[in-house]
Amino acid sequence: MTSHLEEKYQTSWQERQTFAENMQPMIGQLFRNKGIEISVYGRPLVNASAIDIIKAHKSVALHEESKLRLRESFPFVEALSKMQLSPARIDVGKLAYRYLFCGGANGLSIEQYLEKELADIAKGAEEQQVQDVVLYGFGRIGRLLARLLIERAGPSAKMNLRAIVIRPGKEDDLEKRASLLRRDSVHGAFNGSITIDKENNVIKANGAFIKVIYAKSPAEIDYTEYGINNALVVDNTGIWSDREGLGQHLQSKGVSKVLLTAPAKDDIKNIVYGVNHDMILPEDRIVSAASCTTNAITPVLKAVNDKFGIRNGHVETIHSYTNDQNLIDNYHKAPRRGRSAPLNMVISTTGAAKAVSKALPELKGLLTGNAIRVPTPNVSMAIMNLNLKEATDKEGLNDYLRYISLASDMQNQVDYTASSEIVSTDLVGSRYAGVVDSQATIVDEDRAVLYVWYDNEFGYSCQVVRVMHEMAGIYVPTLPMK
Image (cartoon, rainbow, N blue to C red):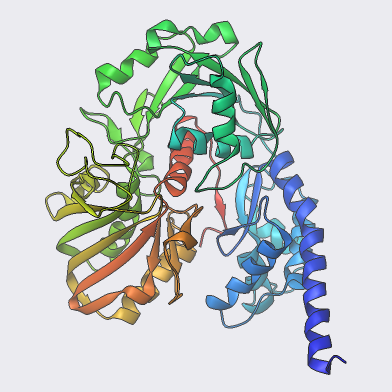
């Protein structure tokens, strides 16, 4: 026989499930038909399960004094589904909380409140030419970029994945490439349907029609033969990092711009989205998205420097092993990397600390860095030992970084956790450049040690997509801004 408390809990849970399940189709239609990405306090709800939607609402209590119940946020999602809006990321959790608990209503109905808060996008999507995208290389980052672009496919999509380019392979190459996109040992199964058209060398995934082009170099390719024009080529190979090498792509017919998913040499701009993406100009034809580590640490360093000032510091990267290491001991041209990656911690080098200055010139010459490769396949950590210009304490520094994650211009780059139990696998799939582990923060007046987790594959790929949007002139605001 169930008790009164049991019945009350079960009834409450069933109510939450019902609201979450009713939200799902509206969230999906907003995303696919209008380009609206719904979140709750930064937790994305697009393609989320009912349980994930419930958990996202539960997280509000970590940041605010009151809970946000699904029955309270549901009317806001419902109202959004009926509005004419241009593409944006809308945090329905923040909007609902402020309306209900922070005096946001001010006599307004939910519809009137949303019209006021979303005035900048409450006009419907403007016509904009869709940007053709080509992925040159289809390794770890290439396949994750494909997943992210396919996820955004639909009537409102402004970037269209048209092709991938790979080196000529064996007869069953297409099947194997599709299988690697379909199944991933770290990131799990692809969320959807993947089939191949072997006759036409095409991968079909959730409505995306992706031509597979086999070539040994950019010089061999005429993209216009495939109906691809003014394409943004994303080079994931790591073969070229200078203007001369990457410039080969611009010699291919049908290409307008090139983005490198690695640090660049020469005078190529290294962009960390959220920090210096405003440096991208319409005339820039070759741009770099820097490295995963540079993306993870630069937003946090900028935030700390803006508030407290940084005199100097050291960044130690605890990095998951990568494909350029050996599975078992064997020859490698780099020191130590020839030793078995799954069995050893390997001291290595990183240019990420110095590379920060390309995105954040005020820190030039102030940081040193090193790296330790560890036997995990994904999710890394940066430990930043900083000497500050202004003294603070642990609570003050953490509160500030929590604010940065919730209400600053870098809220899509910096995440924040107060969990004392979180470990690396919990961060697989994080869409942020870095996640501040507040429980590990150490502060002694003007000396601070920060621990920042980052999914060096998926989180970085999300940053790359943001740079792609900027290069294509696609503006997707995050609302509310603060």
